[in-house]
Length: 493
Image (cartoon, rainbow, N blue to C red; front, top):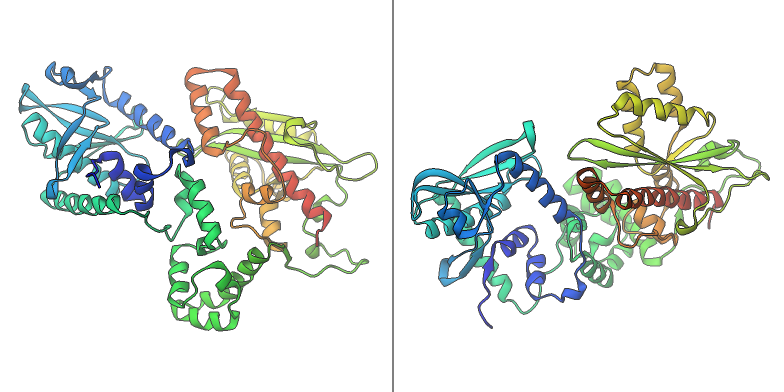
């Protein structure tokens, strides 16, 4: 096998997931899906770099020779441990005083960081850039710079490129080369929560489903999977066949909470293996009106409901869109089955939260909308909407009576599903549950990250089409919530 050139992008992938790095080099490109997460990261990095530099960076070797304050587009090459061929493209180089091949100035690598902490990935990537840059400029690179945020909130942290860090890099490069030389991909990771960020997610999802990977069972993460493997339970079917009492005793050595969780995990695995939902509470007697047995007692007598979904930029702590779909009860008192997304006939009301308008105006608009439908519950999927709306109300001075009334109107459909049903899905998120029910979003492949990317692009460049796509995605999320509500109302099974 021809020796693989180890790049900084391969190293980054390998530090996140060994299987991902192998697929980056050897996988079928047709199986790869574009995701918005990398574009969002590059957008954040660009904002940080623009705040760091007073002028646009130069490009390549010519910019280094001309002593440009910042340089992009420089390709670095070198040799690593055991003769490994290395290649890297630093995101940015920052000029510093000091001798180099170009005269009385040198450079250090700069990385834009997402998240609050400096990770092993950040450190080793900068160590690689620093090593190759030192060879290229014929001058040492003792430190690298890490930036995060933008404008007045720009954070700068220096990282010492110590000998110990270089030893860690050597070890990682040797192991990366071993992974790349393997004829077979590494196994699926134990905890697949972060797989949502990966462009190979679809391929790995198919393999996980085919082999009954324990991570496919809702409620099982990396630690629980290791516990189950230690007991000889290797896949979904084996977990579904396990005796809950025995499993509870076996898991109790890791903590008493695992004794109770054992029965829940076995039951969830059985539902997924059988492909049929399981009601968690018995059918109420016909004459009984006990709300505890009705998943949505708030909908018995109300004239209609407001479906409610928020789109957010979590890094900016910005709930930029509050979207509502207005669903009236029919003239005959029955709830409508609901339109498909492409032919939605109910009124959709988007409320944009723009910085220029201020939070007070947003709260006024929300109160006005909610006031037009005073007896209508607000149905949302997950706790985000409830938390955000109540916090907004408190910040805007809402009294305790108004807060109580608002709290009573908010109905978390996700919580009602979890309380009343066990479903044959590997996640109880809206996408998984609504898709299992047959709901389809009108824009293929769109998720929250893509929506956030459109929002940032719209704020930067404008464009009515981007804004319309955001509205369509938000409306579809509301209609997906109604698909779940309608299923709960029908009382299946």
